[in-house]
Image (cartoon, rainbow, N blue to C red):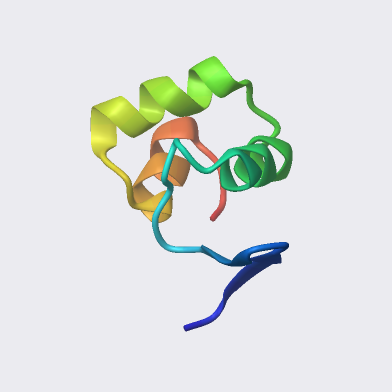
Length: 60
């Protein structure tokens, strides 16, 4: 599976796990949003990054 590489392995590009600090930091930087905005969108639409991006009005 393709993913984002970090020190422990790969970060899933399709799903966002809020307990994974590196993944949260990556998506915050990529979309230019705060952690609160990311968490709110995650809670509203679920863990799929395509759905979160759409909720935030960003391109995945």
